[in-house]
Amino acid sequence: MPELPEVETIARKLKPELTGKTIIDADLRWSRTLASPSVKKFKEQIKGQKILRVGRRAKYLDISLSEFNMLVHLRMSGDLFMRESKFEPQKHDRLILKLTGGKSLVFNDTRKFGRVWLTANPENVLGKLGPEPLSRGFTSQWLHTALHNKHRQLKPLLLDQTFLAGLGNIYTDEALHIAKLHPLAASDSITVEQARALQDAVRRVLKEGIRRNGASIDWVYRGGEFQNHFRVYDRDGKPCPVCGTKIERIIVGQRSTHYCPNCQMR
DNA sequence: CACGAGACCTGTTCGC
DNA sequence: TGCGAACAGGTCTCGT
Image: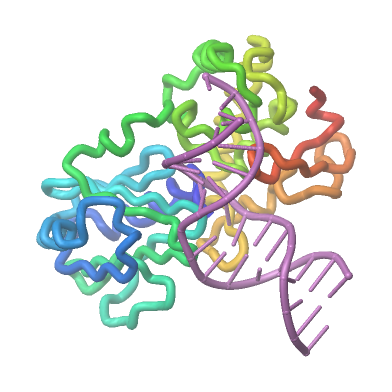
């Protein structure tokens, strides 16, 4: 489930539960979940760390500890939640951090794509990311210039986290539909007007996602409801909410891409 | 530099 | 009913 709004929702939910707690023990149940450091170092270093802050950068959860930052990327199927420490580990639990106060932070990830970093220099992991779409720096002027510095198809470029950080497959399709831009349009063909529409659409759709607590699909459920308001994503063959034309699905950069052939003309 | 294919994983749904 | 294919919110690496 994890694009920017889903990760933001998780961060907001965990913040009051985690802040001020101390990590007593780490149960790493799938070692490849750990991107760095080594298992041995991780277990030594994380024990006794106090949780100072819980934040988000792009699709990463950023948990500030006394001496390190723990970064978590949920990738396709990861989930992060609290559970009573006395409960038995569940099938897809990959990392369980036992905290003071009787609860544990659980990283559960069916597909094992998710990763955890423990580092004193989070910039080593986050340094190449593009701007936050909800930050002040993400202006239509910046976007227009950045689009013209590349010659790429719009959709893959928006998914590129070094270009702009936080959009995934759902929110990209939704933003392009709101902005009335074709997913295959060349980035350097976008006018100032269109860049303004796209900048506004990206911010609007991300804010809507956050307001609706993200999108919950399939077996991963966190109480989000944005999935009930998709305009085009996963709606191929259904009518466009704007003009009624049938939504089409194509493959772009090996990702399913949904758009209205009438609203989003090339 | 831009792009496509394949890899990493497990689980569900679809088509015959 | 059974069984293989297709597909899933992401990103990395390699080859052209």
